[in-house]
Length: 452
Ligand SMILES: [Zn+2]
Image (cartoon, rainbow, N blue to C red; front, side, top):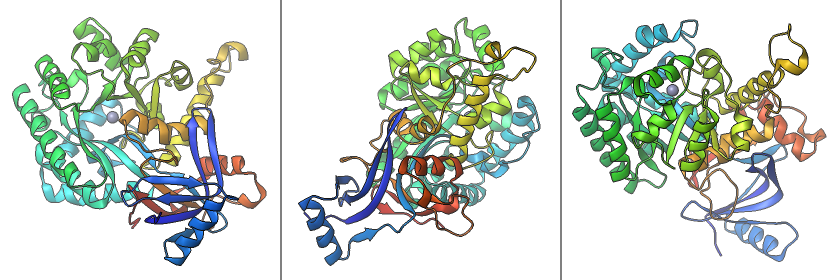
């Protein structure tokens, strides 16, 4: 059977939080519709025939020594407008960060020329960092969010995009607020329809997401209305939940129930819900995530600045909750999912060991909390894909071919000496040392995407 192209080489993908597959010197056969039609093992008759056919018709791509095939990253929490302030103002407390820096910046995207400049650069930067799928918070105004969805469609990125809803005067400044709950709902509905139209004309997914900023910023009318829109359009939902002590306590004081239970009450805790942070969940809250199929967007770098605690990811994975990984630009200061994986590992190890040297070692940390490269790789790929309910994240038959070539040989690589390692060690090196310059080629839904 003729394939669109065939890649010959060694690939890795995560099978579960604790295990991964190594496909050594396989043929990865990609169909015209952008799915991985089959992976053929060496030493079989089909292998030689497929390889020779592809070679003859010019559709064989052979990985060089030191090149490996990996699934693309899925970043489940990115604030697109905050790209312009990445690396700035993280010495400020959260209220200052929001009111002095973030809200004025987000409001500036009403200027569509400004929006186009920054969003085009952001999408291209994420692609160059290996992020084949991103879930974005946009801004409060409708039009720049449409532009962001258009730019993702044009660049070939698989994207989930939300028009941010924030309508409560007590929490949101006039210049960065929905004028009313009715307006917020009307704009959200218009955006969901707009993205549904784009999606029909785009090979990869472009999906509109119901996006209350977080419960403290939204009225009850807006929140209940968004829950109804999620049902009406079978739309995914994204928001923040129990990020910090302040948020967790604020929602409890306002509603009398936990942040998680409040999302459930408003109709916003569904199997298509991804909630950033989820650091301060009780075990009952976590059980509600599991029961309703909601997912966590773990944002370890931003948690280090604003959460006041470390999300117990290992515990949540062991409970059977879907956990994805996120950069959380710009509360996280890097667009790299390599960096996010590393921070997830580091934060978990600090949680496990504890920090107060005055305590005896056995009382210093939270036992069985540490993550390694296996769980980090899982969250960055499969965890994200499962959270967004897309068939990506694995190099398996029938999956969308969203993948990149990792190259140890590039100039200025920090990843070295793969030739001395077994393949499991190679994957660990990729997770712990990889950078954007190691990404030599990238495909989304089978299409080669420009990295520049
Ligand atoms: Zn966020």
